[in-house]
Amino acid sequence: MVQTVPRGMVPGSDTANLSVLGYDPNKFYTGRSPLEALSIGVDMKPTDVAMRCNIVTLTEKDAPYEEQVILDHSSDEISTEDAAVLLDAVKAELETDEFKFYLGTSYRHLLIWNHEYVNSTEVVVVNAASPAVTAADTELAGSDLNGKVVAVQQGNIADSWVSSTDNCKPADVKRYTKFAQASEDLKNGKVDCIVMDKSPAEELVASNSDLKIMDGVLFEDKYAIAVKKGNTELVTEINKVIDKLQADGKIDEFIQNHTSASASASSDTTTTN
Image (cartoon, rainbow, N blue to C red; front, side, top):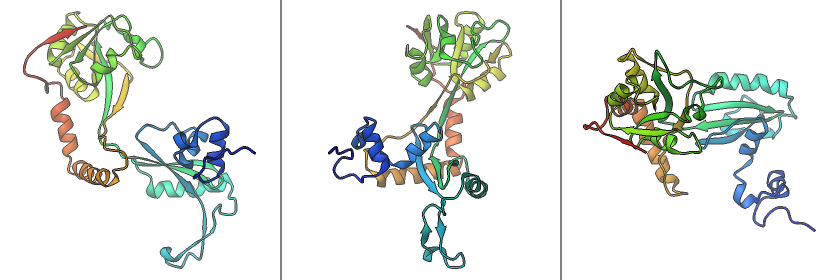
């Protein structure tokens, strides 16, 4: 006899199939919902939380919701076509940027929750008249920076990204404490481009007609707060504070104050690889 499900785990098709395919359920199993996401082609981000969203049959609709019970966990094996109609109604009432619903098969569907609070969208600024960087394909890619002299703000996410040879292989990376100095060097041909956050890039280009933002996004990154695994109480409290900061507009205010083209160190310094 072969034991495909580790002791202590529920012997379901999810855990058993993982084991048969060579994945230790103790290490890789996180519930049915991520498997559902994979099966219907939903590309989950590291910050996503997946939840199975099943269509079920309940007792009489006139009874209070709290008193109803599930009569059929599959809604009589509802067809995918009929389920799509119901899920569309759910999406119309409940879907937001934070909560997204995805159609699966029959009664099995998916809800993705992403509680984001700060995203970083990095773009490439070039000389408008004679850009030294062009996209080799339909979409902007790190390889477009290969062999180029790239300017970044010292110590920020663009600095880390551009400095990794897994992303691109520039001829040189010049690091600035002020985007104003970087823009002057770009206009004078001392650097080929600036990689920076979209918001200050738009501000920089608006005040410098000689510069432009290339079409497309070089990469996106998300900020998060790390806590000790299992400390759900602290996570809950942190999320409450983040929700309040978002509702009060404080996070947007913070981003504007600390990512604008003029928000940088007081001295004009440049370092290079």
